[in-house]
Image 1 (cartoon, one colour):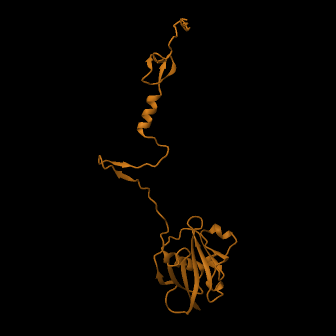
Image 2 (cartoon, rainbow, N blue to C red):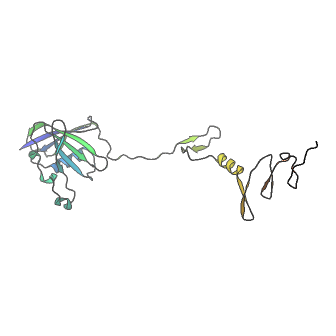
Length: 222
């Protein structure tokens, strides 16, 4: 019986490394659990190992069984599969995927050394380099608050192309007021050259010279 020492690192950040030692007779579920402990993840999501070649191309998948119903599926399960059954190369490579439906964490695994058995309890983390990323990224909306230098009041800055200022709204309604006269809506147009009487707009004086009340124009003297 021998002990495998694997180098485990994040695909997106190779500076975060864990060395894990595990017996060849232990199974892939044991390996999965020690990886979770090494990177401080919660082990609440699906996970798989993929046996890969030297160029990290994924091959046979070994899945984590989450519930008894899944056992009805045809698959290679972690708890039934010993590591020795799939370590065929002195530098055997594997890919470990966790939470594929959401974050999809990908870790690369490479066999670095085969050790003789010892009374040490396995699996174990023999070396840890770098800080593992946070499993869940928490984002909190932050309001941008700026202080007006003139009056000392704080104002929340709103970036919205569809929000109009109070002055714009006031000008709009001042220019288009509506009154209800005899059940009808009559528009009032405010202007310095017009007069409002009972909701009707009269024309300014001097614009219709020569127009008589009876509806005709006076003839000019010849």
